[in-house]
Length: 409
Image (cartoon, helix red, strand yellow):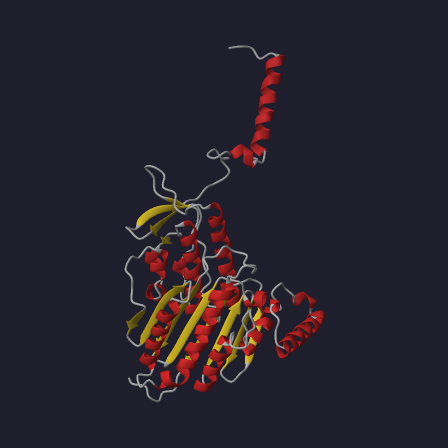
């Protein structure tokens, strides 16, 4: 055995010192590389089931599923629902920008996904939230040709799955090939599946479907002869304005869009109610409304409302945020209407829809646009507010409960 002389002892001491330093060193990202990682970093993989329209497959997710708020509803849970859709839209926009897919399929290994939304934790979803969710998925499907896979469908709430199926959500994703009729029957409820419209050709199909729902609630046709025609006229006007103006050149639209709007509706005989929802991803009311020359009474209303809001914010400066004026413009649109051309025979869609409510006597008209919301009941009462996130477009929900007379069991 070789004798340890002074030089060799010094060499062993120096090596021991360097090894101790390396053990306590914080590794830099450049040291990790694509495969090699420090032994102190523990990676956890999650085994999930994915469905893309064919057979259900096992896959590996790099992260645990993100849980959406429950219920997913703009009325019952507005702040969390707005934030959820803002995050979903941001993630989808990144995927659109990189044109990347969602499932990686290595050879001789399980498919891989980076993350997913755990809809198995969702107890309830409203019709309004469903149409926004469908629109986001259809946008990414149209722009890059793929959508995120459906994950752990076996753990979904049966009511959530049934509702999305009835609305045609999985057809929009392209993973269910069966094309359902526009209006589907489910006992005491009839539902108009989500219809995507890019031009005025779709209006005829929408009108026919809504007329079927009206007759389902009122077979005597009294509804159609009186207020329903007025409502359809107002809705058609509102849809026409969206088709012509929501995606017009020069409008500020932060996200890539597919120049579309989506419509769905539900008729329920249990409470004799009808709900119609329209959503678009174009320029919102708070963006377009201030840019158009208005009648004197409209300008006066806007000036007074904004001045009052500024005076209130002066006493509560901590409450201000980017969308604080949004409810003012939504209120004005509901009260006075008005298209971008400001022609007197145009832009009356929202007031006409509200007028139909007043004639029926029970219901409300709700609008969510960018970061603001406003609800007007049949008696004319307004409630409104602003949130810290954007809905990514404009959502109109018209809900009415019909009188019992003329109804058949």
